[in-house]
Amino acid sequence: MQTQTAGQGPADFTTFMRAYQDMVYTTAARLAGNDAQAQDIAQETFIRAYENFGHLQHSATPGGWLKTVASNLAINYLTRQRRRWRFFSELSGSDSDDAPESEFEAPDTLLADLSADERSVLVSEALKALPDHQRIPLVLYHFEEMPYQDIAEKLHVSLAKVKTDIRRGRAALVPALGIVAARETLES
Image (cartoon, rainbow, N blue to C red):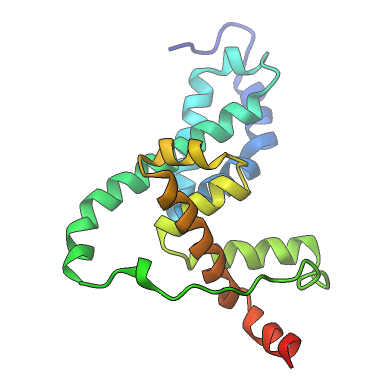
């Protein structure tokens, strides 16, 4: 474990943290789908950054390092949660993978009237409504730009499951984003 060295004070780390706090929190929130958990993940990410600050301060890619740590922490948390509650979800007898799929694709201009901030808030809220098995691969693919195969390896699932979950996650976002009303308008 590398820790701070002489000449690197708390003020340097505070400046570093402020520069990356929004990115780290957003990464954690998109994956965890829970604001409180995202705050814990962001805090743990910065604890690890503090421990490695001597290296990170001179790194060409500290943002990538932070994003990777935040992603891994979020996935580890969700994996632990999934294992804990798998028994109860199996007892429910409902298989969310049997849900009907949507063939509708949203036009690129559908959210064009919204500002970037409004779109970001709308997408973040819609993502929170998705189950973990859809949200996580969707976020890793679209926001973290991970290839399908890497997502499958990271989540310890098959490539086919990743593709299916991403497709179904996209379909689930349609009503969450209010696109159903727009589809009816487009079809009439």
